[in-house]
Amino acid sequence: MNRTNNCGELSKGNINQNVKLSGWVNKVREKGFIIWIDLRDRYGITQLVFDKERSSEELFDAATKLGREFVIEIEGVVIERKNINEKISTGEIEILVSNLKVLNKSLVPPFTLENESDGGEELRMKYRYLDIRREPVKENLIFRHELSLEVRNYLSDNGFIDIETPCLIKSTPEGARDFIVPSRLNPEHYYALPQSPQIFKQLLMIGGLDKYYQIVKCFRDEDLRADRQPEFTQIDCEMSFVNQEDIFKQFEGLMSRLFSKFLKQDNVKFERMTYKDAIENYGIDKPDLRYDMKITDITNEVKGKGFQVLDTNDFSCCIKVENKSELTRKEIDSLTEWIKRPQIGATGLLWIKHNIDSSVKSSFDKFFTEEDLKLVLEKVSSKPGDIIFILSGNKTESLTQIGSLRIELAKRFELINYEKICPIWVTDFPLFEWDEDEKRFFSMHHPFTSAKPEHLKLLDTEPEKVIANAYDLVLNGNEIGGGSIRIHDFDTQMKIFELLGMSKEEYTSIRYE
Image (tube, rainbow, N blue to C red):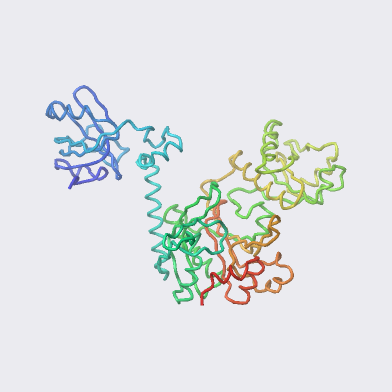
């Protein structure tokens, strides 16, 4: 054995014991005739001591040559530490070293390996094996392991079976581009890496395995974003003979267990919101409810006042920010420039200040009387000290833009309660979305998503109005899960394929008989 103990377990109960430890040199301190070494491994830190009076000259000399991140193996006796370090679990003891072996030397690391590193992200990714030694990264990896284990235990306890599905598959219609793997044995043919185990888990249901799960790698060849990358891991599940309520109950149970174990929060309430309400109230299909600021439609209140911007546009909306009427012109101009960026695309930002003294001022005073402005204040239940920001234009674009502004305002003004957990089921998504460039429909989720039974009759006449049996689980503004009830009727599935513009060759290529 290269160690009898790890660097995080020794205590006063081990005093006078001979031990062997292995690890990395975390820190070296020298004072006269004594050298202290902090030895680090995954489990913690143990202090080593080399004393010129009690150590051989050869051993002490070897200790003087140690540097940070050297990998060493030591033997010694556990002794009581005079100055207790309460910050570490082994702070009551130290090891008087009797034997030292350098397993590997190290160059000076390109960045510090402290909790708060001085290395930029690109540098730390280049030397990922060094970055992993840092406590925050290590703790994240351990947390991920523990969370995965809890997920497996919960699903297993609830009758789910963990089944691996193939990684080299036939390309199937999903939401993104496939990664392609050429076949050496079959020239001019290729495999696709799975965007999800979509087809296979449906085959498992057909095979009678009514509860399946897998913590699985998925691959999507799409542009990088903050919440998108080519390779990711998902908890993939499928159930037979269930409805939407059964699914919500099952996975609220899973999330509640995780919230309780890892965040120490019990009885978390799961809100529900339709896609339409999410867009109209928050400008996004994954709203963050840790702060308020709902969107209000004020089209009727601002039209017909002689201000061309508001009179000619079809839609006007606003959000109220409480206790911010004293924002300076510079601060408002900064927000205006932010929302006019190409990524957001607004043409400008209007505002009304409801001042502390109850007076009212706006960026369009010459067109609106104070009474006109007060109609808007009443609509949003404004109080003295509030400010209202207004956007006007195309309804869909304006809602998206003001939804982005809502998120930015929450960040700038520190309105987010980071201790709060706000999970939401967003339901009733449209079954299709129209692509104006390609002049055809695409699935909002995937081609196997069923429609609400009462909407099936609209497939032939108004497919854009069809509502899907689909849902997303949103947590604090992030989509963390989603799914749908599958199509179980062959004729309906064929109808969906046709509406999506799929050729017979395309949909028969994924047909199983």
